[in-house]
Image (cartoon, rainbow, N blue to C red; front, side, top):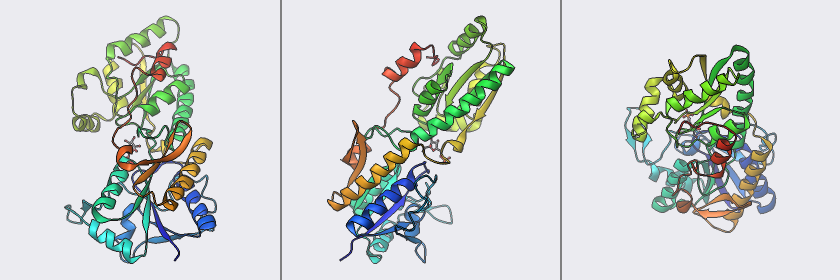
Length: 359
Ligand code: F6P
């Protein structure tokens, strides 16, 4: 009997999702002769009536490799164990999900998503008997099990280009320019884009910053005739005065304060003698075509996911480790969150070239 495998994308999108779907489908259909069915909008397509399923064929893969976003759609509001109801409450619909999977003759699901989606998938396998294989996705590159997630370097590229552009205007106007990039908990995008884009100051969540240190760096540059400065701010970066706050308190503070770059700029008000402007890059970092590295990694992940299915290694997630793609138990893969190593080589390299972190 032909094996029928479901594939879905969950959580925020990332450049490279389509490349995974394409690689998985091509290999599954051409080599294994499986049927591949795409589930729309994460798990949600299985709940609706009629169900929203997309047969994935060699034809439907055409033109997908370089296309950003996800042809299957995605959401980060579809946890089947706490599914949002119209009246604002939440309900466990995981049993209905399992029934829909069985009704459709789907043997198992390939779930492409971040740690949230992977944790849900694992629960679905353990508690509802739905076999799953995971493919990691996050532009934040904060999953410790894999050296890289696709989408990360595409985001770093966008942020780097933004820094290049800010440089010319900052220099012309002798201003201090703040660029806020994504990274609520981990500052990898800020760190790598900051190094690539020649930032003078990088503020990351892992290093609460002292505004006096940041101001001193800007003043030192002014003394040397460098009358402009570029500051990259991860959206989760906080000043020392907020370092004691919990994760949720930090989030609320950012919301009320107008974002991390705006807060950092306000902190420097009166401490430096220069005009300042801030800019939030936002979802521009997640949209558009993946860079070559991400296309290749996504393709490797798609093929590796099919290999795991072929070997019935359900419950595992693909990952890149020391240059090789292999499988790792999902449970192990999501256990440790990867923050910027504040004593690591990359931070040291940034400091060695004169970049200030404010702490
Ligand atoms: O995937 C994580 C992330 O990129 C964060 O860095 C950012 O805070 C978040 O997504 C934004 O997500 P949303 O699309 O829900 O605004």
